[in-house]
Length: 362
Image (cartoon, rainbow, N blue to C red; front, top):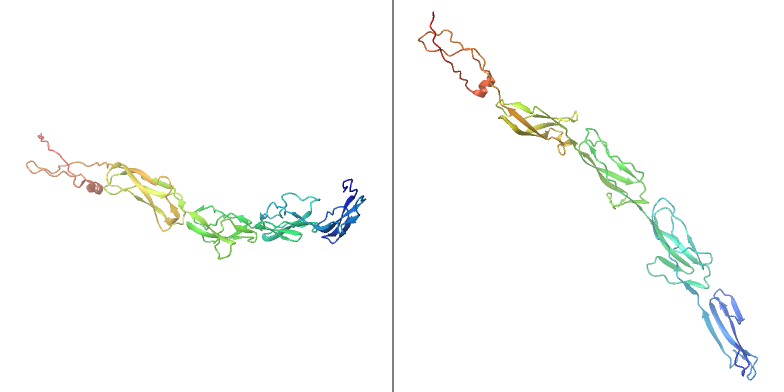
């Protein structure tokens, strides 16, 4: 440094000290760059009116100073949590690390589920740099030159399937289940219509979990239960004898099951029978029999049927005869007329009306 001309002296600062890495520095008129503890002195030379002195003299100047380490914020990672996908995975810095950055990044890819995997940023020059204290909850810890993140791979979720139901067919049936993620436990005697429990077990419960968190075996989260339904067989109905003739008794059409399993004890009973002749009667089919619970009329077509009862046609056949009648006597009842039993039942008493004509004999 050049002082005013009347002083005529040159001022020179000298620096010396020890860097953080233990390297000695100076004395040098150039400022040190590395972090460490340093001192300085001043020297006046080419004095015109003053005595030459240095900082160590009584009238000189001297002091000390510290170059602190440069603080760095720990870089952020893109993800700290991954879902198992059968592939190797690992987090990466949001901003890619360049060769001239003062730190390096290291991580080992992982495939299986775990919650204690680590990724680290390491300072290249710990003597001149330091990590800032990370925020609480940031997921990073600092130990000297190393800033460590903890990351995880969580279990993949498996959707609990909805099993397709099957219609009763009289034979043992099982649910159609095919997956490499779980196995199914089913019985071999599910034949009747009803609901049946199927137990599903994860093939790899280390890396998978049930999506809905269902647990059916205590703390064993690898199992869950789903329902398999064998539905009732929808009945196909055939009606017959829908036009009837009056006979004095209750009558109704006949209903039969067209798709019944041969071995089953099931049939259709009919309600709505009528006695008198008419054209607007309705009959209703109803299930009966020991195996009726395996069948249903819900959704079936023509569970009712219209039918008619026609009036009975009555005819009396016979030949009237008055054979053996003598004039002056009481007329005999005509003979030769016969009513069958059904006609008698319907009519009660049949009456024939006749007359006698007088004819002179020659």
